[in-house]
Image (cartoon, rainbow, N blue to C red; front, side, top):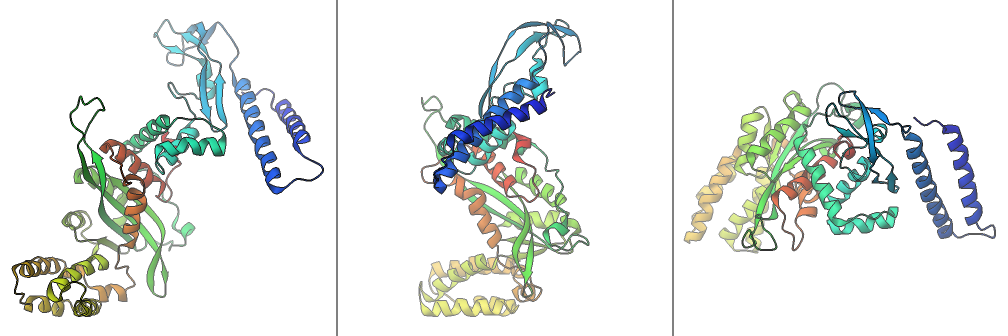
Length: 441
């Protein structure tokens, strides 16, 4: 309880007045000088107010205090002060330690008054900042950021440890928060609107368990797939879906058995089974379509147009030679046909191709199988007429923003659990309506 609130306010006013009296140059100041005065004054006053409020919250000293676990009056033993890092800097917290003879628990009344958690050396907001910026940039760069912007000293190892702890908590938590009301984002208010589910995988550099002393053997580096899912709603322009209005993101370095529940949970949250229309966009990977067939059977499946075009180029290069004008013309003609739902005609064209070399014959066999298997997902004329997105640009951007920009830098090799924790934070921060990160710190 703050007993002297009015007194504290008056003292704070006097302190601000004294600092500004000392620092404001009445002869004139540049904008940079004004900025420096305001910043230094704000920092000093914030630290002073924080320290005073901590002191005001201290429980009165007493030889006996009620045990928070069993309620027994427990004897005072000794002082166990601690330092907690807040967003304004380190704060010394005086703590009187008591011991309960009934349940053998040790406690400090100060912890209850200030909401301090055992073993926590920083406030939730400070830890959340470490997790946010540790998931956005290399851990070693974060301390310099805190020092420059807040005048706070924190080590890179602390940033790393905190980031991974928050990521692990996010991974263990259920995705239970409520989405913002549709009206707040400009989407139709009556029932779930058209929604997209895009799935993909991107490779990240990993390493197997290893120690510098060689006790776990030779360092083994490899690539692992980060599976990503994005549910989103779009805006609309000139009859076509365009731009993302809001989104929900999930991802993991784990296998499909770990990824599947994440997709189902975000699907439940976004009410995909109730959506007016559900469109699943993918690049042709078999696991994507199996997941969609099993859990979202009512969805319209769309093969990403640009991934499909890569397969067209594979045929064109084998048919006419790499970089040839004839090959380019063939691709353009094939795109024209597919955008008009002339899928049967296109497949017949590939079937009638009779390559001479064994390599080209293998291309014909492989690509014909690919296009035949995805024929129902390539009704691009129908999709465009209805205004659907036919490209997975949202997911391609997501692969970069959610995973590659942090996890796939030159020289990086991650422990799988560490990469997964960072990915958990990045997907959380990119999801519309997600609770503040401090809730998991």
